[in-house]
Amino acid sequence: MASTAALLLLADGRFPAGGHAHSGGAEAAVKAGRVHDTASMTAFLTGRLHTTGLTTAALAAAAAAGQDTVLLDAAADARTPSPALRHTSRRLGRQLLRAARAAWPHERLDRLAEHFPRGAHQPVALGSAALAAGLTPGQTASVAAYESVNGPATACVRLLGLDPYEVAAALAGLAPQLDAVAGAAVTAALLGDPDALPAASAPLLDVYAEQHSSWKVRLFAS
Image 1 (cartoon, rainbow, N blue to C red):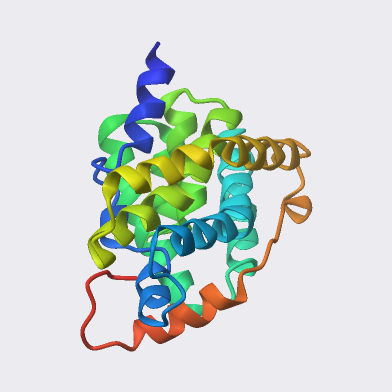
Image 2: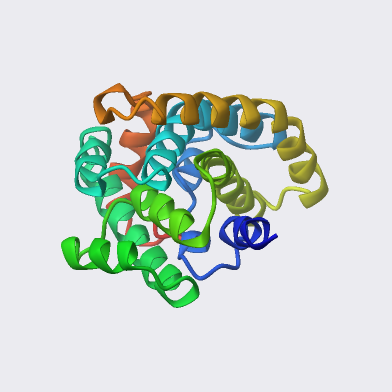
């Protein structure tokens, strides 16, 4: 029961990990005209899930399995070519770790904070928090996969004024793919080799991140 409650808390957008302030590339995609309605949002979320979502879910699951966080952080860095996204990931990781240390005090979280004072990458921090909270690697992969689409979907409601019921239906429709991505992520993570983790690429998200970081006026931090 404790791990189920922790899973729900980590997946809750109200958990003070900073994710609510980030659109996951949705704001730039909206400005570019690629996302403009529920159908185009769903296509965007699907692509994000199978690229960024898969990669982050595998990294988080590996951290939840107790693997070396220094090696995993280096693996996350290598899989994040955009300087803007690297900065965002570490910023989110730092805030998530702060919240997790308050919720689930654990020596692993203390060591991670000490080793990465400017923040470990977000999926590494997420997996470490999940371990401290008693989650399995499979549960952790599910949380990470869900986060990869829920944040941008919520941002699209704010950016485009989409019907929240239609957006919720779109997320529900992605459920089988979320399960499949989480399953593939944990299978790769349990191999125990950071080099074997997925490195699915989303070049347009990298481009969007660099463009977005230069905007003077924006609703979301990334």
